[in-house]
Amino acid sequence: MKKNIAIIQMDIAFGEPEENRRNARKQIETAAANGSDVIVLPELWTTGYDLSRFDEIAEDLNGPTHNMLRDLALYHQVTLMGSVAERDGNHFYNTFVTYDPTGARVASYRKAHLFRLMNEEKYLHPGHEKGNFPLEDVPVAGVICYDIRFPEWMRTHMLDGSRALFVVAEWPKPRVDHWRHLLISRAIENQCFVIACNRVGDDPNNVFGGHSLVIDPWGTVVAEAGEEEDILYTSVDFSDVEAIREQIPIFQDRRPELYE
Ligand SMILES: O=C(O)CCC(=O)C(=O)O
Image (cartoon, rainbow, N blue to C red; front, side, top):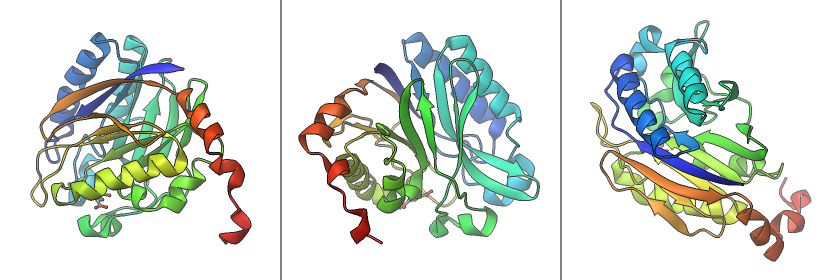
């Protein structure tokens, strides 16, 4: 199945959900008008890392950001995804959501590995469930930023035949080399597409690196953004995964009994 992908590599106004929703809405409308089927937003794109104000700015899964994503997905007949600050009772999560063209939420994955360098563990709870979901009839998975440093967690997402890993991030510029190498490695070792959206700009503590990427299941970078706000367009044929998995059948050759 072939899909036109748009990655919205946006800057994020720190702790300003309304401003970020306005900006994202414009960019989603542009991407939809340009024929995109799947539109990816970055990590925590409504709030940024304004963690100490999550009590005020995080929302439950029926909040205004979710209504907007549901309505835009339905109106433009696209799939929309990205991570949003979630409130559930007294707990907060960094939650990757996906809305399909019927407006249904088909994924809500809570970031499993909290990033101490940005104090996430002081404010957020980690998730415990995997981020697999169907992109129409194609099995895929969505994960968040620091999660990609844990290949064993990424592998568990691939054991059901998933063909793509969607990654949303606020990855700082000083470690953009790690971002690129980790993403390319995840694509090669799992023989899957990696479709990764990073933010640009800065917040009070970090400068973010951009370089959103689309990598094919052979590990070749097929599209890459620079360090400015941009919409990165590419098209992906998920059936390309089959030939590579037949040529080098790593999923058949695994010996899980050795790994535990
Ligand atoms: O692992 C890294 O270097 C960056 C991770 C990160 O920024 C995050 O998880 O938000």
